[in-house]
Image 1 (cartoon, one colour):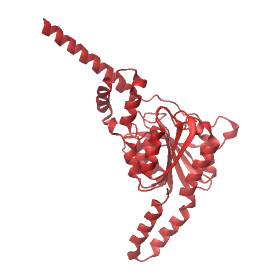
Image 2 (cartoon, helix red, strand yellow; image 1 turned 90 degrees about the vertical axis):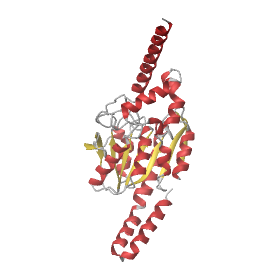
Image 3 (cartoon, one colour; image 1 turned 45 degrees about the horizontal axis):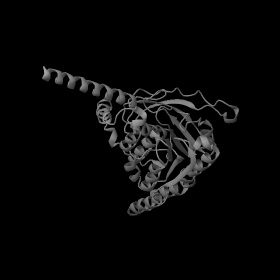
Length: 331
């Protein structure tokens, strides 16, 4: 009788643990879809509406909805990438149509995307950058198909993590701005688990195990910090709010150091709070960064390519090394 009661209690405990773990895993691998706005909502930011486009993520596992804002005299393009539970046009927890317009007026086309599982893109589980990076890479492929060669990415939060991982895979991403990115998902979920779930810590390992079944990804191994270290000196600007209580500013410091990039800690509170607190200063800093690395340096790089085309074959490798040295100094 005692053995029967004990076995029953064990079964009930395991079922309860599995149920709690499954509920937590379901919660943090499912995005809350938000529909994108139709376009600018006030006269101050009114501009020609961007065109709706759709393309495949590079892994072929998602159909990505996007808006493309062309520039009158395009000399580059930038992909805007939102975070968890957001969508295109709301990448920085505020409307980014005015920012996209400023980019277009400066000669930079903008492609605003809905990550998989968000907005009007196809459904998918959240993997905090591991799979979402292929959406960013699909955006790069689409831009290259339109003739763009100098491409940058502006990502926020999970979108910043996905952008770092995409850039590590794709040298065509010539410049990168990451806003409010976490450095290591495993550390982040350990920091935030109790606050987000209000459950005992012993449930987390079970939740991560079930999340692996749901997503096919070991989420605690998702590490944008490793991706940052693989950027090979490409231009990277890391932005963070000093008062971010969700992802501490120390993550930004670690990412900037690993990427050998610029670091801008703003005196603001909240996660992804820098643009909301000072849109003019944010636009000036970020647009200046992209203009410097996608426009101002485009001419000498193009001339180097022409020189390589007309030079003897023996000098081609030397030209490539020289170009690599220039890129390595663009931090």
